Amino acid sequence: MFLYAAKGVRNEELCRLCPETTRLIESLPLCTNFGFAMFSGLEPHTHITPHTGSSNLRLRHHLGINVPEADKAKLRVGKE
Image 1 (cartoon, rainbow, N blue to C red):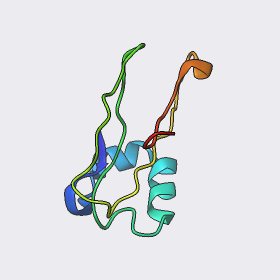
Image 2 (tube, one colour; image 1 turned 30 degrees about the vertical axis):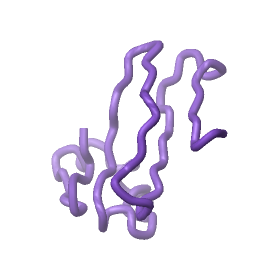
Image 3 (tube, helix red, strand yellow; image 1 turned 45 degrees about the vertical axis):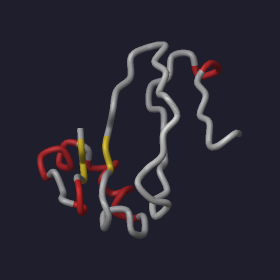
């Protein structure tokens, strides 16, 4: 569910439903200029294969909202 899609196009309906998240996103520098701010859901035991973006122009932030087994959740950046 995209709050902001490509080129920072705002999803008014979803932003209205998530006012605190929208305020936080809008307070970050450059966050809405270049693209995506979204919610995505993953099923338990999901594994996302290593991947990269098309360039090094963006910094992605991932925040677990409801992580039932937080001690088992891992995020790898490069080899760390």
